[in-house]
Length: 436
Image (cartoon, rainbow, N blue to C red; front, side):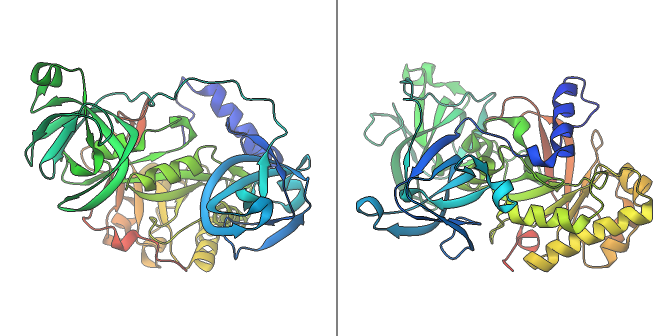
């Protein structure tokens, strides 16, 4: 979750984050992928990467835009520049030197990528072939069927061995490679491969005389270590995440920070959203509430909905409560009602609430109103305990749904600590957004 102030190793970053929120006109981060693009022909600038999304402006050929990312959206086709079609859209933060916030009041807008050419930009410096993202730790997996272990991450690579169903292997990484498809319990396909260092507890060096072998990722399941459904929550503080390794470690869901206050979007939200979903994790988004800065909870809800890009199949939205400012219990309760009500009005789903037991009792009057009035899903933050303390009269007798049980977890595929969470039920149906 949000990195808290008591972390002695983060005071400078926490201060910087606070400054960004206090000055919302500066919010929104330039990512390493920022580049300038030139329109090859007139281009529709839209609020979302969808062909039926609202058009904010039609820019002329020759207009220069600044894009911070390329994202997947609706399929489009165009005759511009000889014709093209794709699902790729540019996420644009400036047009002809003016920010999209000053032009449209939005951190980012979108346009079909095929309408632009890259530049003007300095010629890129040649770089070596990308190497896999370092992944701390290892993950134990169980084969779902007989699996061919290969010398490289491609179906053209030689076979080192064929292991039986229910064989335990240890994966030290997950990398992109050649496409594969198989019938292994269910039909699976993809291009991710596990780099395997051990089989049945023995190193592959001992077994096959090589330092590593590879196997298609879709042929395995995580080795179960908990009776709960395990997951994580992340933000920009986790940096670049190797999501297939997170899935290999048995994590089945992730909740990513999308927004904070008004005007701030987490710099890794788009990448985390795409990566988690592509790896097969159930993905949700959370908003870090700033009632200490903004008296209007509904306005913060609008910023969250406008930014998070909710899609059917995602986990329901989350309101993260950690700040209260000078609001009284009654005022903060009203603020929370306003945020939740606006999200319900716009998305047609009632969000969940994230809070610690002490925060709820100290600043929310230990109310059970939300549990009794259509908000049954509580995500409780209670660390270093074998069972969480649930406020609001045990959340109206329903208890917790999600439980954040530590802030210092270690997960393969993530460098540094990460929040670990549990989901109390087997099916995600009750906490899945179906679409408004």
